[in-house]
Amino acid sequence: MKRVAAMKEQKEFVDYQKKDTIIIGIAGGDGIGPAITAQAKRIMEFLLKDAVSTGKVKFRMIEDLTIEKRTEAMKAIPDDVVAQLKECDVILKGPTTTPRAGDPWPNIESANVAMRKELDLFANVRPVKVPEMGIDWVFYRENTEGAYALGSKGFAVNEDMSIDFTVATHEGTERIIRAAFEYARKNGKTKVTAVTKANIIK
Image (tube, rainbow, N blue to C red; front, side, top):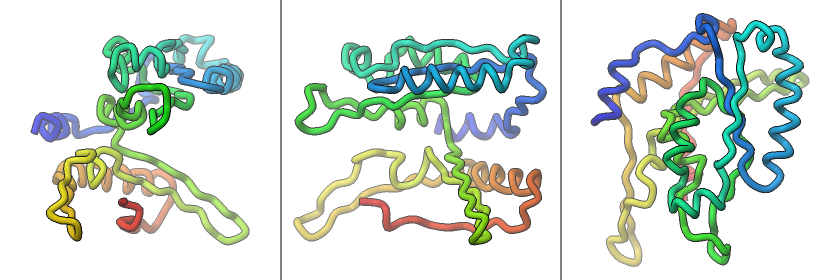
């Protein structure tokens, strides 16, 4: 209910054009992540050089979103890293390790899932464009509600039947719909379609 109350309070989306300074956090993550994000940062510095020179855009390095630090803290994301992430307006994140059976790491939650919850990253926006097929779509998927929101909270009734739970709030549903319609309006789209993808749930 705390989450619903927070959604009721925040009715407007952030307009980044009106912000004095935009902080872009760079979290390298694991494996080749630091190498990838370092090169992506170079590209952003080039593309945003005017905004960087005026102080409109600033970069901030976030070093400890690694499997070593996460397992040391036994948290999906250590508290100090969460605090650093929350200070940023935009985050460029490299891949992070989610432990699986047989890995040398203890079982901790996915950093991606934890970031969605901690930062309320409710909109998963995925553009798809195939010009030769006339496809120019943008998918808006709700990230913080639905069947994934509670994790593995279901239970087996017997060997033939299991029950699981889904979360759907009025505020969360309205918010993702509004985000999709606002994008459509601002970008000259004339159609918004509601789609379900229930078959992906395992």
